[in-house]
Length: 345
Ligand code: NAD
Image 1 (tube, rainbow, N blue to C red):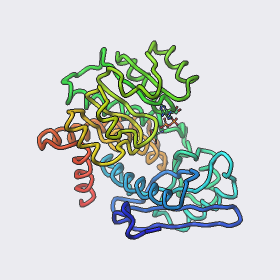
Image 2: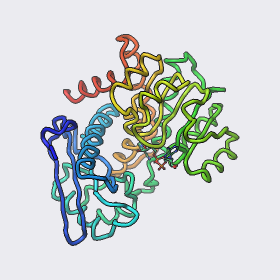
Image 3: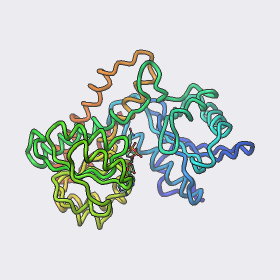
């Protein structure tokens, strides 16, 4: 396994490999950049096929957090943690407490939070060993950042629609949402309230059915969501969904959703740009969650102030899309440039 020469290494400051034989913990913490503040990023628990897959995932996610926090104007750097285990079968309190000790050993340079495979209860166990944990729902907050993430995506989508379609309201706008879990369902309700017409899909047919009935939406099978005749495609399920084949199939003129790492590779951004499909950079649109998680770390949590911060995602999206248009470049490339400028101070 390559580490310093890994294709995703990209100037990481520190990578910690942790092992605890008694509990079976095998974990990696990647700290990409701490120039703007401590590296905050979630803990993913996943049965990776190989150690190399786990390292690739944690490095990509950690760099993504640096860029996300920089463009959300947060006093944070970027980091991420993974435990190589199946969260349904292998996760134990002893393993999580061992993870807490690994986080503690980094002295606050890395702050952990929930991610796929880890939840609030797991964070409470980690908290027994370290205070460098966020997202615990203290101070009357919910502990679930997904309504904030959804509202940020809604704001980003509104801005993208204005840039690409010249529309200032969403009345009658057709939006296809892939995945109506925590974020997708909130987003669907917000879009419905703004007058949008929805096409929804999910592999979980039961929760999809409930939401379709509630909102009077159309539902389609997961494999045909890309072909829906819509104005906007909102990926809110998994990463790497935007492949070259999907870029070719999409009927939408705007892509804006919550999923992390939507582009299967950087060439897809160029393909979308050539087809005049406006891609809203995922880590800009979905920053509402980290904005809320950061706010929870502080004693005086003010929900309205957090929402106002989330709504400033619109300003950042406007800046990226205006620059992308002026320079005839993909917004994905412009967002990375802007993030690097902010990091350079
Ligand atoms: P979730 O697990 O609650 O929802 C995902 C939904 O997608 C589920 O209902 C699942 O059944 C569905 N799904 C999975 N594969 C699918 C497929 N092939 N086709 C259609 N549906 C499929 O997750 P979430 O918390 O809503 O997060 C959604 C995405 O947004 C994830 O990529 C996550 O990393 C990202 N994200 C979430 C937050 C947050 O605050 N929760 C913040 C930033 C980014």
